[in-house]
Length: 103
Ligand code: FES
Image (cartoon, rainbow, N blue to C red; front, side, top):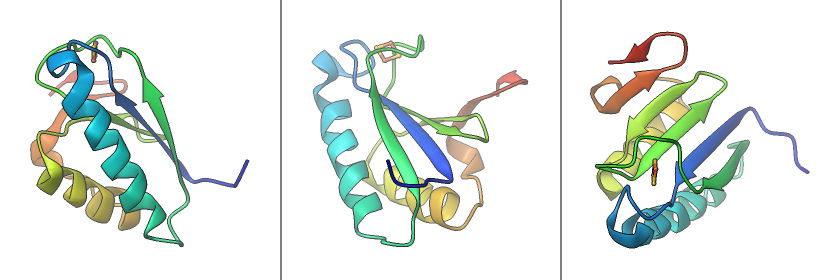
């Protein structure tokens, strides 16, 4: 396994989006976006459920423990560029924080 600095989990389960279809497409876009940036050391994992179960896709970034509602590809692009690449959280799309709770 390659070295990585962040780990992202995206729920592609059936309840966040209709049948998980939008979330699955977003997961594929996430992979393409990460792979297009060779210096980005991010591991991506599909999750079946992270217990939010509505208004997905839901994207969780570790080690920060930041949970995003990733509503569309524009939000996804911002999370990849601003958070994963530049280490600046996209605060207006955060729904939950590790150790804090819902925000
Ligand atoms: S189905 Fe996505 S959080 Fe439960």
